[in-house]
Length: 234
Image (cartoon, one colour):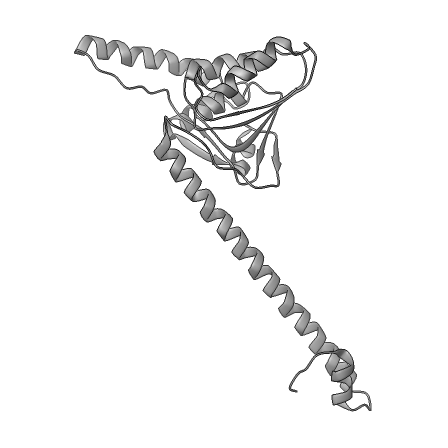
């Protein structure tokens, strides 16, 4: 089965609804390839999808096509094999929420967040040691594919271009990511152009060397230049 989850990790996300529908009909040993691109959302839904993937008997591969942040990164940890495109990102952080209430209610919310944090921590420690994960959660760590692989969060890096992320809940963060992605793409194109210029310069040097060698023979330099199809002042 192949599927893609994109956008916010919420129960009303149609790509998650479609995923759950497909999982009810998939063969128990069928291989699954799931592409993900999300800034996160409901931590419990992320954990639920992660555990659904882990419980599946077939080989599960998750591919990050843009960013796997927050609950989406938890979701990805349910795969047997996790892959990222070379210019994508993985982000992990502590659970957080919006809150209102009196002092007693707010203290309870803080206690609840700490309890949820234990579940978040446990979602990563089958791949990365606990102390490292704690530190990265404290830092709200954004990781390139290379860094994520070095830590052990993912297994493989794929060459290719990342795609923009969609989000209503985290629109500002999504905009920042998409702008950075566009800037990176522009830099890549500039680097490609510079490489082409460098290649041409190397070709010119090689041709100049060949011309100099040919001029050591008793030939007319102009004829040699004409025969080679290029022009130099020597």
